[in-house]
Length: 241
Ligand SMILES: CCCCC/C=C\C/C=C\C/C=C\C/C=C\CCCC(=O)SCCNC(=O)CCNC(=O)[C@H](O)C(C)(C)COP(=O)(O)OP(=O)(O)OC[C@H]1O[C@@H](n2cnc3c(N)ncnc32)[C@H](O)[C@@H]1OP(=O)(O)O
Image (cartoon, rainbow, N blue to C red):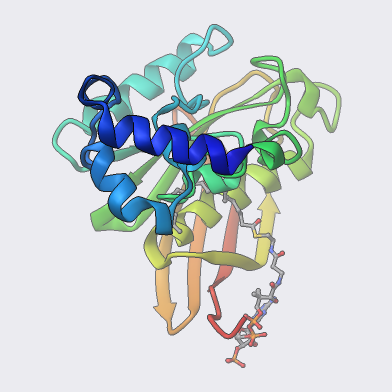
């Protein structure tokens, strides 16, 4: 069982020099340190899984159009001087929370982050987010796939709301820590063709205690078409729960 495995692994790692060299040492420090202190904070399973590569869905794949690739490369370029940071994207919310990545394996099978819940590439939400710390701005490059249809050939209003909610929500999360969307109001100005690429551009306008006020615009890559505009009100975790 878990306990015996744990003790066995602990002994093996702590005792046997060779395996200590083999186990991956990272910023977390040598495994023995983890076992000295780690046992009380994270389980062996979680410790191990942090080394197991979580699949980052915000990396280019063959379903991305040239437009999506070009926009991605443009933002990647702007990450070089630190102005922008690429936000990794996993298929479970907890995997984004430092220290919780890969936790409770068996639960892992049950829940999926909504926008990462379709198995095939390109059919649903293809997106990648970049954050600009000095502007408190989160942008999301979004390419809606054919399974997000609302009006024939165009994105469903709920899929647009979902990508806006996730971009605004992630912006509030990064700026204010754990946050929930309390209010999201969207004006739909021009339908988004399926397969096109749009930029969801959100920023924090104001923070008042726990309230985070954000605004967001969804535009075509050339900036010429305003598809939607939104305001969001997120509540940073109330801590009274
Ligand atoms: C940890 C950092 C990790 C770093 C992460 C890095 C990258 C992030 C990337 C990916 C993360 C992955 C996934 C996350 C991405 C997307 C998630 C998107 C966000 C969502 O999809 S999230 C789900 C939908 N969301 C809900 O499911 C919320 C249901 N709801 C509630 O849970 C409560 O309703 C709550 C908590 C909102 C408030 O409840 P509460 O008890 O905390 O606050 P309370 O009621 O006391 O109100 C305090 C003051 O806010 C005002 N206020 C309250 N509600 C208002 C409203 N609706 N409109 C206008 N004003 C409102 C009051 O009027 C009062 O104002 P005043 O003080 O002036 O009277």
